[in-house]
Image 1 (tube, one colour):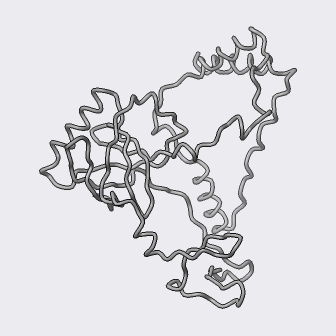
Image 2 (cartoon, rainbow, N blue to C red):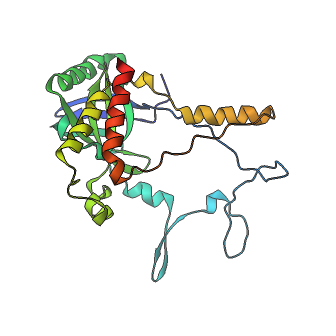
Amino acid sequence: MAHAVWGGALTFGLVSVPVQLVAAVESHTIRFHQVQRGTGDRVRHKRVNERTGEEVPFADVVKGYPTEAGWVIVEPKELEDIAPGRSRSLEIIGFVDLAQVDPVYLGGTYYLAPDGAEYRKVYALLREALETTNRAGIATFVMRNRQYLAALKAEKHVLALHVLHWADEVRDPHRELGASLPDRSGATAQELGTAVQLIEAMAIDWQPLDYKDTYQETVRALIDAKQAHETVEKAVPAPRSTALADLMDALQASVEARRSRTD
């Protein structure tokens, strides 16, 4: 099994089952190192005292919160002492309809595994009950000195834990975007009908394996080409914005182009 990032007891009602949390996704992003142009020497970052310019050992680094009166210094041990006591518990508060969970609240995803063969029945029972009711368990847990809100749901023979943003972390789009949000498009019935036609013509089934990170492939090709001292093709320029006067023509041409692909 993959490395567990957290372990504890999943509790719902008076039922408790030991579980382990494993990351559900992995990044394949190409990582670059910072080097100095012309020398190829690695560039390293150091913790430096901004007043003296001297390097500071990691053991001497503490957390500081700025106030008008100066820094409030907090030691790592002090944060551990005040952490919520349920640091080894994943406590389900209640069960909600999945449709009520707005996607904007969804964060990272983890898989849960029973921590011991004797707990597989309880684990499978909860998964099957969630699948049958189409509900998600809303839970809280503490990991790395931080408390998380999460939604536990059944997914393909496994329990998946979706970390949720707290309500005060989600921005109000009307406050953030303001006047840039139009109330209505002002489109004609013909324009709206053609836009709907285009969407229907482009309707597809969700197949995750049909998609791959082509940008990372392009970056890899760039690295290989530079290593072989070959030239690299530049990307196609971004399409120009559609002028309002051209909107109907662009929509109609898009519908016809889509239909010709499927004929």
